[in-house]
Length: 452
Image (cartoon, rainbow, N blue to C red):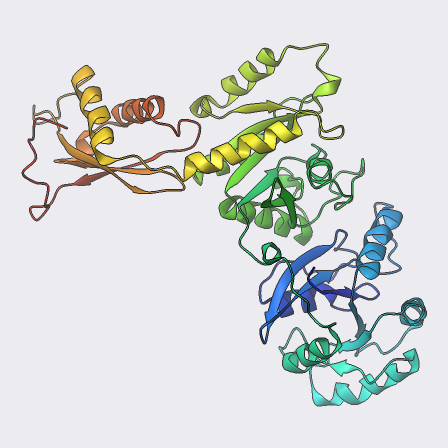
């Protein structure tokens, strides 16, 4: 198992800033408002050939506006107890305050190495002030500034010196996952509950409070020997309701997670009507041509009152262009159908990486052209397709070489896409079709122009 380094401290000392700084990417939301971080965020870091997992935690002693103090504290305690090294972050500009003393007392009672980190030392004058933190009872503080990128090497050296000897660890902990999927939807649809059920751990805070999850959180777990990453995202709100930076960045991170994931689980609440937020999310998924499953959650509350076919028809009526998207009916809290959902997500991922041989593809296109030739163009000539080839995956991308790409109407292109979807083994995932004009230098120009 990889050594774990947990970042702890009172609110607003820059824990998430240091997390992002060490990782080298803006993964955690950073905001001036105290208590932004609630769930633990993790990331694997490599330094000088050694690996460790850095963990961001919530602020100790926060009075949460949604009264989630107990749940946040539980996440902090898990981070502390599982850590091999603790980074105790303090604010050099404010100096030690009473809450710092409380945190220090808590950490001194542990048999764990603690590195005192004086953040926000934006200049040499602040380093003198940092000496005041000797009163907390730890070694000389490591002075740094995440904001101004000062003394990062010194902090990494201090971490490396405290790490335990690294035995052989499971390479799966650092290897690229076999599949990465993201859960998206509006607030309180049950995303975090489903993540906890899939990973069999209380990894995410779950409550009835809307907007409990504030950031996109990657959760790594293993199923049947395969490494998965589930990305839990904040519940999104209508555009006019996005009033704070946290809402804005939460939406931005959710969109980024959709773009980077292999499969998207678009979640709906079985007891609620489809909303504008749902439509916006589905539109974004469709724009980015991501494999998707429509997941109707909390089905145990509706199973006796409504057949699944009625909800499926409701989804198809609202998203007519995505009739090929599979639909799953689950209960995330009890785990009903959740394993089947995960298996189907793996199937979609496999479909998105499928390839088809050129001869078979050309036979399909030829039969489609014979069955339904393209309409005559404005010049009274029928546009021609010379040959087809697959040029990419994720999504499967089909190139059609033709004499005049603009002569093929949107309706006819939809017809060809429908034929491909019905004829190929990746019918449940998006297919990108590219019409390209054949150049004079094309090596296949001798192919008969009577269509493929």
